[in-house]
Length: 185
Image (cartoon, rainbow, N blue to C red; front, side, top):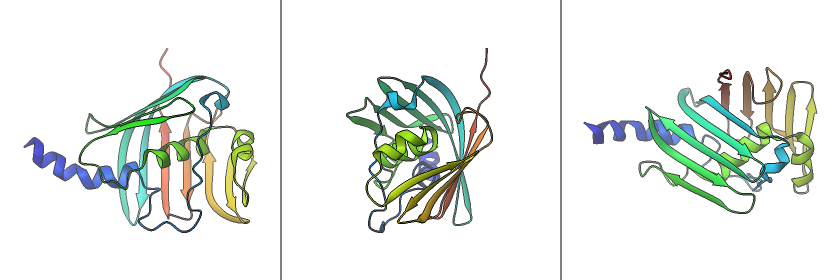
């Protein structure tokens, strides 16, 4: 029964964890962005519910994210089972993923999308390679390559890790909706 469940979960996990991954990325498709954890400017510990929409399909994942000045830790759960962990200390990214996840699920891409969504625009702009730029106006952020929009991000709340965040990746044609759990006191 458990093996059958995992076989059934594999397509869900593959589509969900790395919607940003394309089988044949265009040139300069990914930035390779790895910002220092401290560049976030604060420490956070949040729970998120992710919904990925791509090619008419919707997948869900629950994530626990903790950012401290010296490290980023991510744990992804599907069907109450751990399927992905990431640890980034500002120099080295270490990860674990469930054996059923395909090789296209790249921890580097997960980290990059997280940082493009949550880190301050100024920190992102300082790390972008030539040809890339980030623009932020109100509750909207856009990432450009050679003045072509690549990614649009909308925020419903302040700080960026509250409420709902919608990331629309125009290059890879997916939409990621991040619903942050309300803090419990």
